[in-house]
Length: 466
Image 1 (tube, rainbow, N blue to C red):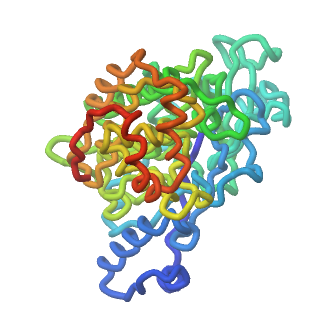
Image 2: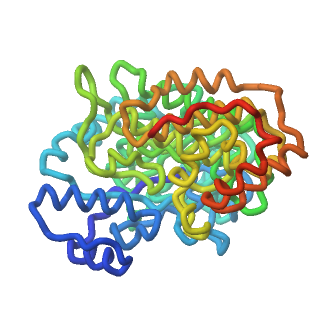
């Protein structure tokens, strides 16, 4: 489960100005407090894909940070094949004004005692979870995120007692790393939201442990781990097209459920590492440490500290701190684009101009012919042409630079339902001729696009401006 940092602070103004000069960007001059804060946000958003560590004080989440992974535990550890820009670097900044603290989630107002007393979750002792995970043995290790390490364990079906491995209920036990970027506040948020929210596309929180300084969370075990691993782990078999669209629909339904409640919830950290998969590839959202109560009544947004993950956070949220349900829609668009292309949202190892996936892909997504050139080549043509075009157009709408024109998650779900099980599959010959451009830079692909005109569909949507 990818977990965003909660305590990292903005670097000193002089460091930011110096880093901007090191990157040969435009110098930033000191101005009024408000304007300075706005410029910090704006400059950080623009430059994060180039060198995020120079613009913000960040702590990296693990590049394999799903909190309850299945399969080979070694895949959850960082390795030499990770991209130069870690895709899950977390983004946190100070408030624009002191008023932001007053608008934080209702999680803050609830005391630890109130949550524990009112919770219907199972309450485990530390000894029980220690035995359930076989003393947190290395071979029980599943992954590591900003919150801490996660271990596989076995407990009684209806209670808290540990049982023999392979019997009872298989669980994932998340332990708090006291030296990590996340802590007690995220632990409380997880219990508050997942303790009362229940949906087929949300991971189930089974219980918790609070004992002295120990803070642990116990979840249902997700057999197939994270979507991130299936898309980007070295050596992983490519997910079939229909499976990708099934996962996209399931994840969208999870976010739709959060947004359509009487008291909306903004997920705020939608990304591939937070989408977990069960044995049937049913997608479930995990990690609610950054979730926040959404606006109600006539309010269009809530003002809060900027927190999340580079490459996924909506631009208007990064620049202003205004958070809305449309912020989640943008993040969904990024993940949908990753599923279509097989590329990470941020990767400095790609050619210049392609580091930031959403910006590079935008000209392709708005064109029903060109979008087929950026479909994941590992699919080898085994994807629905109409489905790819619909999904590309949907991603384009979700990634609109302005939040208002973006579709609601209900609209997103409707489009994805139409895409399921379309049978007009592109063949291998079609793929080999039309897909070749996907490995070249964006500018080169545009220049060479005409030579593939005969193998691409003749119809083309009129591009709209984002």
